[in-house]
Length: 279
Image (cartoon, one colour):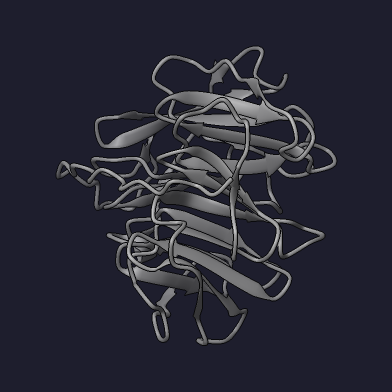
């Protein structure tokens, strides 16, 4: 079944005050919206939260935060960690770091559209999705982007999950339809029975990396088997994004936007109970 593509509603951005001291804060600064919640796959205590205006990082499991100045105004939506790079995408385009997210450079050459709302990478291939171009792909390290599907992907948002053993399999959070899957490198897509009418984030985790969690403004849903079956996930009030942690059983992070920052909650029992991550 092909996905009926909707138009993602424009997000209203509220100008937020910044702490330019470079010091740490109790919540992760993102600005007036909250787009992404990402755990470094190499370090389960290293978490990034991103919005239109700012990105912040915690190295202690969400207890304290510092702004990532290199990603100010990056509109951080899509993220991907590979063995030698970190990618962050947003309205200004694609940002690349080769020094573990310390510095970034803009790499927009060849993109069919620089408004990259969703992004993913694995095993030598890059994928992106934009409101105007749909789903696109390029070999890693190149600028030779091609549109894989011009009729699907306009409402994809956040991370694109690329299969660790099959780079042609992609899971996407669809802000107009829930969770979508491609098994042919983004050329065709089907909706999965996630139970969510809309999703803006998707993550993979668990000891065997078979746990998939989708989340967004309508709640959260979890799959224990890579997306084959799904069940509702109970989340605290106000939470909109949930992140599973690769290689770690039952560890989940959840983000709740409050003004210009994000409070992170943690569950160590697969979502049964949640606690504040603040120091």
